[in-house]
Length: 74
Image (tube, rainbow, N blue to C red; front, side, top):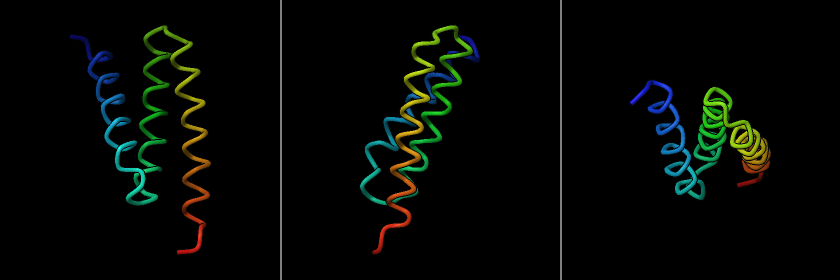
């Protein structure tokens, strides 16, 4: 197993964990967005640019969701 494979597996694993926890606090939405960025980086480094593009889009969607949740009244 290469370092790149381990990085990708961790990125996708963190995505699943933080996606499952998103409803609990805005911080998990932010963590999910960061995990999406990591997965996108993995996709580009692994040479699977479609995966990199899709994960970059998910990161943007998650960051926007985090901004809305963070600024929402309690």
